[in-house]
Length: 61
Image 1: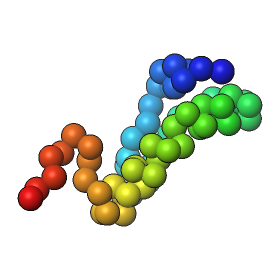
Image 2: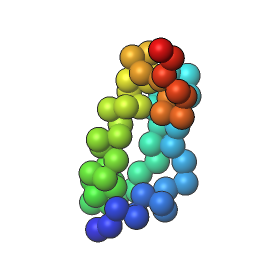
Image 3: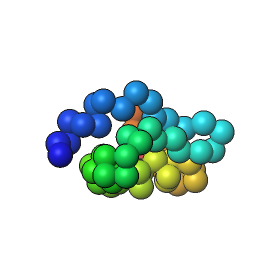
C-alpha cells in the first residue's frame, strides 16, 4: 500500500462526458488505488459538469 502505486496505472482521462480511471483488476488493488485518488475525482466530476475549469487553466477575473 503506497500512494505511488497510482503511477503504475497506464491511463486516465475524460472522454465524451465520461471520467475514465484505470484501476487494477483485483478488488483489493482497485480499492487501495481508488483510496488515493478519490478526493481528486470530485474535481474531475466538477469539470465534467461544467462547474469547474481544468486545473491548468487560469480562472478569469
